[in-house]
Amino acid sequence: MCNGWRHHSSCTCGWGGEGHRGAPTGWLAQGRLFSTAESYTNPNASCPECGAHVFFYRSPYGGAVFFDELGPPWPKHPCTDKRTQSVRAQTTSALPNPPRWQAAGWSPLLDPIAVDYNPTVIRLEAIFKEQSLTLYLPKLRLQTFHDPCEALCAGPILAIAEGSGAYRIELLGPTGKAITLVGFESTIDALNLADQLSRPTTPTSLRVAVVRKKH
Image 1 (cartoon, rainbow, N blue to C red):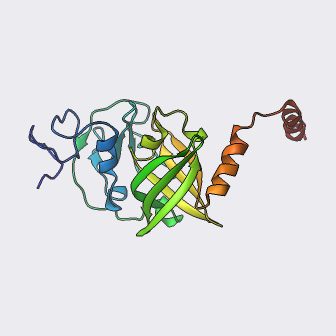
Image 2 (cartoon, rainbow, N blue to C red):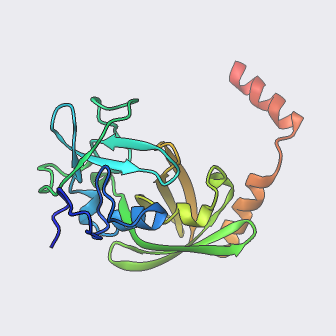
């Protein structure tokens, strides 16, 4: 079984490292890297500068980032922040302390499947805390992606329950910056939010916002 380190050129484990030719590429391969709960707590790389255990994420859209933790607040590793570095993929044991996102109540959305529900809403099915969960969320906040449905399955994605069937969702955008969404178990709530987000801001509401800011 491949250990994710110094892959043979014919290896197709899906883990991949810098320059690895055998692993699948694209959004499907990226999604496989974050298909288990352990992948959110076990670092998948080492920093090329200091050797620390870190999480490496390469977006299928071009961005590449090293994180100290793979989840909110998405702390970038200081050695490689704002720079492009090579990565040495490897398996490691879990970090000694639970990550902050876990302590705050976040959990990964595993095995996500996203499809269009209608032109403005996406249906997302995933495993959340070992239970099947179906959520509906507006597309508008995912306009930076070529395919919003693929974006929800292409990398790490976490959620936290906010009550009344609503969930806050966070995933990484094309450049590795976190994107926050709201998903609902109710299609009606999702459609209502999609409608609100699509409405243009009126001059009156802009003036009110400016007045409130001055006060």
